[in-house]
Image 1: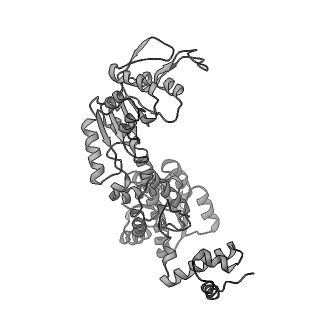
Image 2: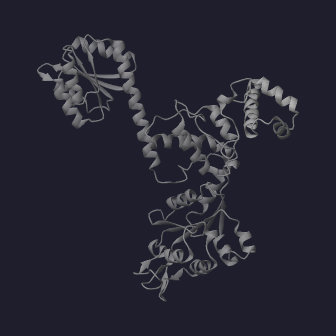
Image 3: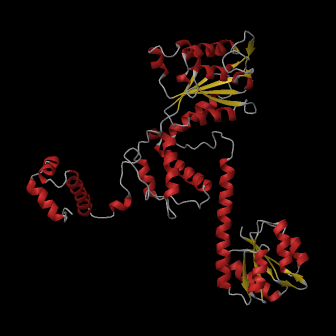
Length: 451
């Protein structure tokens, strides 16, 4: 609701102004004095207030000072029949956004209020987006409406409240870690710790210490005892990302945890127990690694109790428009710019892309385009896209006839070759597979002359 409150000691002014504002979609509350105003201002969420500079014996500037403390988000316009620049500047110094002199030009007032309303709506939108993006990850707020993704969600929800080990398979960038986090956040362990360990980022000795902990002096640099993640996570969830990168030696230790729920710190013989739930993820074919003797077969079957395959983006293209909207809004909020519009033609181009890097590739592309887009729409203009990013030309390049397009790039083609071969037309003819006569003809056609 567009709520506005007006304070003025002129009843006729209040009546005329309220009538005008109601016709323009505002819900109006009026006050004839300061005491009445302070009572009414807490009855609704007012967007803006119109304040007379002099209200009987009270000062509108004093009202502005008070509102700046009690209602700091309300937009304030000072209204005065004593419309000196000095009084307006003073009012704005204490917190008024704008001023308007009496007798009021109602068209001008309408413009000012429309600008305020537009600013208010943007602020509300940004506030909601910030709230949304700080929300705990669950399957309800992971983006995906396609049939393929809904199948994944159904599988996850069917197993999340069990103790079964889950192996999440999928290409790089498909959102495996998000799936793992959502499983934890919707499970009965949601109030317990959730810890992520990336098996690909640490060498074997450091990964062993990270997982199982170590005793002081157990290896060079072990100056103090350290708890491992299996101890810290207690009865929460431990997510092992890139499990296919783990060495065979550590795979053996992990197998013991899965079989016996026990382990030892590096350099210790004291057996420790764990009751954590293990989730693992990989972008590799573990079956193939088993065949290559690079992954333990017994560990594979222990991990693969409940396999989940996250589909690549090319298999769930119906999710692209929703993902794009999310990434556009997220990145606009991030750099504090108004939310960009998303043209249908923009989505059409993206739908033709295979996205070998999946959702992560799409996210990074949108982030770049949000930064480089200059107008109100997100576009591919001002963005250098190579063949990997997008196998299409910028739309502005195609706003010409086919003949004009071909001529333009054909002239670039011949000019480049002539420069490359130092204007040796025989070499140019050999490179193009054309006769020397045709090369001369093209040079005349495009006005190509050696300088």
